[in-house]
Length: 243
Length: 254
Image 1 (cartoon, chains in turn yellow, green):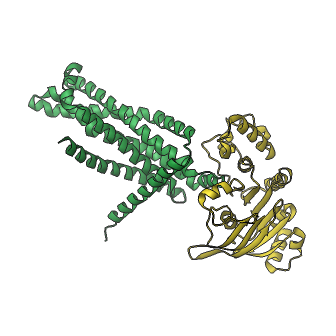
Image 2 (cartoon, helix red, strand yellow; image 1 turned 60 degrees about the vertical axis):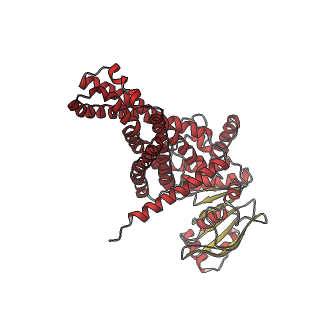
């Protein structure tokens, strides 16, 4: 379980997270929703130590991780693997090297097996054959996103954190990616956190949702509880999702 | 208008020193990425060898022609080989070849790291629990330093051959005449200084290009600024350090 306790983060004079508190249960698909600039992505970066917090505490399974050193966070990031908004694959490396980047210290056979398993998991099994001859630039944007997910899966983390995983994708690929996230969570028993502003798909694919506004949580619950929320901003988002 | 170049230069030097400390710290504390080091070293050597050889050849040849034109007036063509080789090995060769490498290897490395920074590839490595400085910078730093040393040595050898060819072509001086004066002008100390200079120039280039690329500012303009800074700072650092090393060498020799 991940817990944010009164977490605050500011960039200079600009506050981004303000006393943010919520619980993210393990073994679920948890969506963090909200308008642009409400601190959703920053919350994920704070969680993984990519962005230090100014106040509050973040706990993982009851253990405080927010004060960890960079070396400690490096170990934690293999457990809490973040799939960033952009695929950010290493463009000078082939797909095999990209997928196995985090496990490059292992023997080739093990890396090859992991790469194959992870590519199957993200629906790119057809790429296994020419993996070492294919480079990121030869793939579509949607495929690159899938490779980025495979790269994180290769670490076999307990948590997969997705930051706006469907940005820049067409509606069909968006559904495919959300479906993939759901499948990965169910089949591979991963705890998943997704930062998104896509309320419709969050209600469809999520187990729990939290709404952020001005860096604070304004509503949290199951899809049914969120649908019944009386908070004006949540209502506004739900109306937009229905439209 | 208040002169700003001195504080800027001091700040840039301080930043480079801090970055060097980070590199050395990673080198000591983290496991060396051997595969990365070998591939970067091979890549830099392979890509830059032709440029270095051509630069070395022409540097030696141009200097030989200039020296010949001056020496001919005094009837001292017989010292051309010694004088030209000494100039090539001690000063002009290391500096000119280092300039060429700064423009090629330095700019390339800086642009590569800067592009990785602005396209979030470095952040992605951090997200995977990796140490980006150890994975990307340390192997490039070592590869550029070592390959610059190797390339400069090759370049200097070729510059001697360039001088020899030009002396034959312009002054009809044969190789025996040309090489006979070498021992009077070149000693172990000169060669050692050339090697030391080559190493120091390589280290400076590596530090400057890695620092500017790795810590580049956001956006495509940031990549451009990183490459420009690398070119300017490398060349500036090379001439200043060359001056200092030459002064020290003179002190040591006397």
